[in-house]
Structures are given as C-alpha cells and as structure tokens.
Image (cartoon, rainbow, N blue to C red; front, side, top):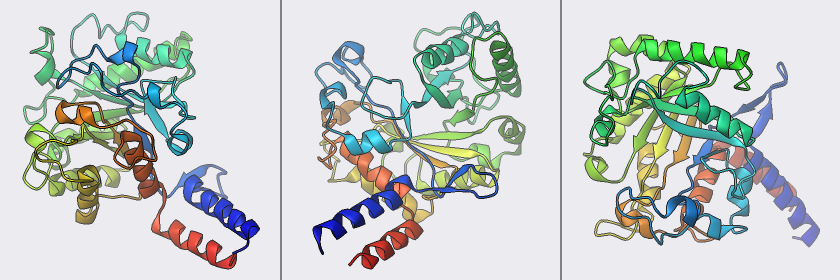
Length: 346
C-alpha cells in the first residue's frame, strides 16, 4: 500500500474506532453504541496520595504524575475521570463517590453547609462537569472508622442502599442550591452504589428507590470475599442479573472494577483482563449505551506493585485502561465498518 493510502486508512480507522459516536438525525443529539469508560487515577501525586494507607501503605508507589506525556491515547479517549483534573486527560467529565448518613452535620440540608453540595461546588469551580455521583450509606465500614453516628439503609441485605427520603431530600437540595447560584445545575445523576450484586434486582421493596435514582454502581474487586471469581461474592451470574435488570429499567449501570491484583501468589498474566472477558462471555452487556466501565485501580495489597504506565506497557494501569477503551468503544459493527474502509483503500 502506498504511504498516502496508509495514512488515509489510518485516519479513517481512527475516526471509526475512536470516536464511535453517531448523530441522531431527528434530534441532532449524539448517540452511542456503547457506554462510557472511566478511571480513578491513584496515586495521583506523591504529595496528594503517598500518605494514604488503604490495604497497606501507599508510600513510594508509582504515581500518575510521573507518567505525564506518556498516555496520549488514554488522555484523548477516556470519557470520565475521578478526583483529578491536573493530569493529561482531555475530558472534564467527572464522577465521584459520596457517603450519605455518616453524621447529621455532614448531611445538613442547608446547601451552604452540606458536604455533598460543597464537593460538587468545589469541582465545578475547577472546571469539572459532574457526570455521575456514586452515592450510598457506607455504614458497615464507617461505624468501625470513627463515625459513631453512621446509620445503615433500610435493608439488612444491603445496608448501602439509601432511603427514599434520602434521595428526595438530596434532589430538593440540588434545586435550592441551583436557585441560590451555588451549583451550576438543579439536577445531577445519583447512582446508587450497592454492596450485594443482585438483591436490588430481586426484591420488590427496592423498586421505589430505583424509580428515584439514575442507576446502579457495583464494585467488583479481585480481593477478599470477591475471590475467586467463580464462587466469590460477585460471581458472574449474580452481577449479570443485576446489570440486565438495571438496563431493562432504562437506568444506567456502572461496573466499578478494582482494585485489581498484581504479582502475588494467585496472580496470572492478564488476570485483570481475563476476569472481564469471563464476565462478557457469561453475558454481562459489553456494548450498551447505558453500560459503563469505570476502573478503580488503587494500590491495594499486592496490587500496589503494578506500574502506572506508560500506556505502551500492556501490564500497566494505563495500558489496561487503553485496552479497555478499545474493547468497549469499538463495537462489532464498527469493526466491520473499519475493515470495509481499509479494504477500499487497498
């Protein structure tokens, strides 16, 4: 193939594979054949994160700051980022986690005093655009970490689930904060973080809460009770049941994946990819506009040894993120279209 033809083919392929957005002629709005790919970059910088101790000390672990300029593909194609707008990422769309019900002061419904409103305002003041708020009652952990006032949700099967009143109060507060010019918008997407992968999809008592929130986020770890995949807490059949039920409700589902393992006693090469492929093979939706994949790859236990980058290293976090973006944002149909374009240039 002539060099000009190769460049043309590469440009065509890039347009088809990386953008993957179509315009709805009737509405003029962009529509997707796939969901979003997000990343929680940790540790961000030495100053910000090396003092942390979650699953072991983070002191001396690789940082995203050290990879500046070494992840152009991920920087360009990542959809949503958590907690850091100073990296190379082009997107300003953000998500964050928020725990409701830790103490009364934090949950004060006065927008000038409320912790959730402050979090949104802080990120918006830095140019962030809030895509998703992953919210829950984190009673099980908080009650043992100094939050003596922490209260569980309404269901013993999953104490993370909010009360209906929680959601009503939060939405009313959003509207009030916007009216007072504290927030840019009067509504934000509240994604209920769950602990149990399918309870919410099988118990009718949850339906009124589902009707009020915008979707579900499930955390899939490779540690503790989640291990091993086939018999652990989040085995594929339970996760898939919850995900499909959520999508059938016309709500959004976030597969919040991580922390992931590295070179410990049980690690095998590309285990982090293998788990995802097993979920997909078992039926977890892969290409769906409301099915999102967010990586939560903080350095937990043996996972802290994994390199952050560069993205050309397939074993690094950024290399894994690049692979995931390509897997999610390239649908089978787009692959076929790309192949046709390539053949036409030969």
